[in-house]
Each structure stands twice: as structure tokens, then as C-alpha cells.
Length: 551
Image 1 (cartoon, one colour):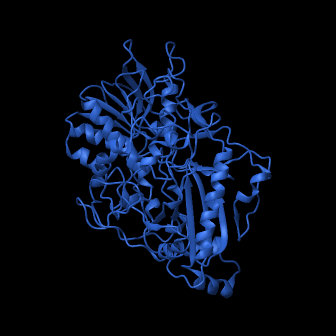
Image 2 (cartoon, helix red, strand yellow):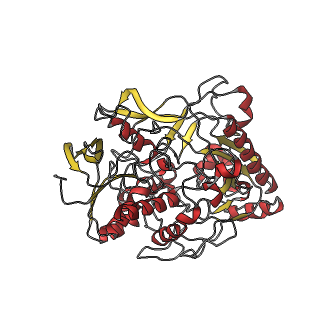
């Protein structure tokens, strides 16, 4: 199919940032061509949660829905951090000894290539960054400040929440609001209520976690049925993934052309510095597409890869990289998880994933060592009997069955996500050896845990263990970033800033080097925040960039 002509703007990537940018550009009257490297998912066909084997299935993998990613320096397993090592009462078959390289987990960087991007498998947490997260340097002397503040994004946050149908309860957590949440909060499940009660005795303030999951019908989408399987794909459309929100509404304007399975391989800059065209593989054919305006939203791994792949004789370090910052300042997801069994607790597998959150550890004067806690029983795979049988309950025969029936619904898991400060050893570059199906170097992630990250992991572990102990739990397993690189959110590889010498894009997401190139994904985040899920901020930044494009 020919893709040349007939459009005012091209968007690469249909996840949180690309979908929101495309929607806003269509609102402004621009004709938008949206290129997505992955396939289109059919909820009725692909999210088979009604099948007998649902518990053994993760988010479905379709041809082309996973990028090949390699890993470089992930650091070493230090003997002095054995207190942070993963363990299970069921027993691990092996453990890497101290002095071994930290491996990537089986999932490594968890992402989806497809129409809707990784919002297809997120659980819908809808967080605004805390105002202090924009001023880390000013408040603590560490890290850097954003070149914008909370007030710049606040009205856009409200607009995004309206498109998604966010359900939440207004609380005094420092994230001031000019508009109420569109929908009332979801009820807390039994596990969350147990943590809320235990946390109150420890001065941990557990509250309803805002979700882009409908608590009531909204904009022709049904309310959630609380199946609890958000990360496996939502067959009803109540979860606010980009495909059923921004992309559907952009399509309704008649100004969006969305092409899936379109792999962009190279960008070409013209003599005036503007990005003149791109090359893509669509249905096995090479296409050349003019780019009067180009919005790049391929994510914090694939965005720097494409810019580096597009190097030429005038720009040997890659496009948009006069600063040398493309691929640098990488920040992973720093995570901890503790799981315990609470005698007498029933129904912990019921409700919405991550239904309760505790921000109190993150609200200490905007300190750099910020993190959050959340109820993560469903997310950690303890939402069915197989999880109990393989991880928590031992034995066989009638004794085993009896123990399984008695214990099911009593598991309680607390997760923690913490801030990462960029390190010079961490980044995304091109693998010198490994190639993809197009013969191009794949993205290679290096990510080393610093002393600051390890210290924060200990704080996260202490807080998670404390609330589980207060709830009466006996620990059964723990896991953390210490033992393996595993990330759902990554940031920073094309950071924004006012100074073109130290950043890739300006405060509205426009490339310092190419006047018609804009980036609208988490690669532009200067900091990772205090454990907030980034999708709401990505979308707000995308609307801001699209408004600037139209202006």
C-alpha cells in the first residue's frame, strides 16, 4: 500500500504517547498517519479469559508483538546485598552466586508492540506525578529538575482522565486538582482492606488507587466486572487502554489513518535539518513516507534505537543527538515484592489489581529516595489456585487438596516501586552483534543498580515487610530488582530540558536539532518520579506537544 502524501503529520507508535498525540492533532484538524510496528489485537479473540487455562496464560504474544532486545551491563550480584535476594518457601532450584553478573529476568523489559502499545497489558494505574517530583534538584540537591512544573500539566491531567474515564477518590496527597475524577472510586477488595487496617496502626496511609478502569459505564464503554485479569488483556473494553480511548476517538474524526505492522527502519533529515521522510517496512514492502511533522513515540527503548539507527555522515552520532544524550540517562523500574499468608484472611484474590496504594513513604519533602507501596496480590499471579499450588502449598494427594482449599484466598502481597537516579553506566545503545529480521542492530539495555538504588530497596523491603507483619502474615516469598533486571516502565533516554547541550528535546518535547521532530514518550522524562505509574504523565505531555505543534 502506498503511504505517501495526504497527511499533515506522521506519528510513530500507538501507545500512550503516540495515541494521545494523534488524538490531539486530529482535534486540531490535522490529517494524521499513525504507524505502529506491531499487530492489532482483537479482544474477543486474543484475551481468552473464559478458557480453562486462563491462569497459565499471560498477555498473549502475537507475531510481531515483541521487539528483540539484548542486554549489556546489568551490574554484578554483590555478596553484601544477599539480604535483598529473592527467595521462596517453595524453594528456588538454583541461585546465582555472589560475583555473578545480574541477569535479565525471563521477561526483561516487559512491553507490547501493537495498536495500543503497552497500555494493552497495564493494570490501569492512573497517577499524576507529585509536584515535588518536578523539583528534585531544587528540593534535595540530587538528580535534576524538570523544565516545567506540575501546574503546567495539571489541566492536561484532568483532560486525560476524562478521555480514559479514571475512577478515583480525591485525597490530600499533595497532587492538587482543579477538576474532580470523572468516576467514583472502585471498592477495595479484602486484601486491600487488610493492608489498610494494618497500615493505619503503622502510620502508613493506604488509600484507593486511581485507575483508568471504569467504575460505571462511560462513553459507550461498560463498567468493570472485577475479573482481576487486567494485565492479561481486557476483553470488555472497560480498561482505558489507548486502543479503546484515544485511538477510537481519533478514528471517529475521520482524520486518522492507522497502519499496523508498519516497522519504521530509518529517518532521513533534509539539508535544512528537518526530518524529510522515513523508511518503513509494511506488508513486506519498503515504503518511503514524507514527514511534514513527525511525532516519535516508540518508547524509551525503541525511540533512541531509531534515532541511533538513522545516523548519517553529517550526524554520525544519530539524529537529535548533538548533545550526545540520546540513549543515556536510562532509568529502570526499581521494584520489591513481599508475599505472605494471613490465617483467617479470605478472598484476597477478589477485586481490582493494585486497588490500594500507600504514598506516605514517598512524601518526605520530595526526597530523592521516594517510593510507593501497593497491594499486588493479583498482579503477582496469586489470583487462582495454580499460583497457590505451585508456589505456596506443598504436598500431594488429599492432604495437599485440603491445604489448598484451606489456604486459598489468604495470600497477601505488597509491592513497592522506587525512584531511580540515572547512572553513567546505564543506557540504551545498538547491539554490535545481534540483528533483527530486517538485519538492523537491536536495542541493547545496560542498567546498573547504584548504591542509592540498593539503599532504597532496603527501605522498600522494610516498609513492605512491616505492613505484612502487622497484618499477621507469615512471609512465603520475596523478589526484587536486586537479582534480575525486570522492568515495566523505563525512562530518560531522550530527556527534555531547556539547555540543548544537555538534553534531546525542549520543554514541550520538540527536538533541539530538528524543528519538525517531537518526542512524546517516557524517554523524555528527566526523572522517574516516586513510584508513580507514568502513563497519565506521558499522555499529558503528548497533548502539550500536540498543542505546540498545532500552534
